[in-house]
Length: 236
Image (cartoon, rainbow, N blue to C red; front, side, top):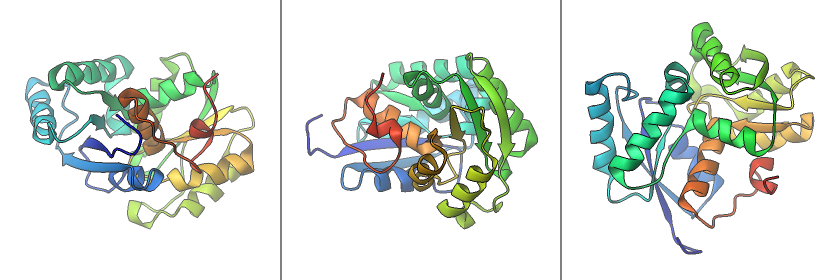
């Protein structure tokens, strides 16, 4: 991909709430175009589910440069190894780079040599998915100092970045080196820079790390500014 070319991202998601289709173009205006295929399954636990996901991915090809599986919760439910296997299978089948949210979060944290993390999830995740998220990251060697459901509106469309900033800033553990704001329907990308300024910690959000992984996988020379240290700092 050359400088100035538009990167087309095919988003595969089981969710109806807008997420990466809104935040990715917002983080890289004029440089990213998103095509969305909404499915009713994460596409990996059964042969029928995998076929649904494959069909959705195929419908986006060859019009997209990279595929992004946008569901933090599905990744948690699958577990890291199975989510990574899903990414590899789709990549081999479709012939384009493929990224997934939770795998991308692990890669982003490792790129910054982070060990101790806090997890913040939207209220619609519920207790079981919140706990699954903690286990997901523990399985990859991270120390999860806490995992919380944020006291935010249940309707994703009613959540404002300022609400996320205030809640997380007031509840973030002093022991955490970084915080991950899970949930692709939680449009928290515009909260990241403000939270980093207030807390002095690395802040990651679902659609932010997904875009970071997309750009890295596609080798896209797109500069993202104002959406956190993940983009602003060179990998160490």
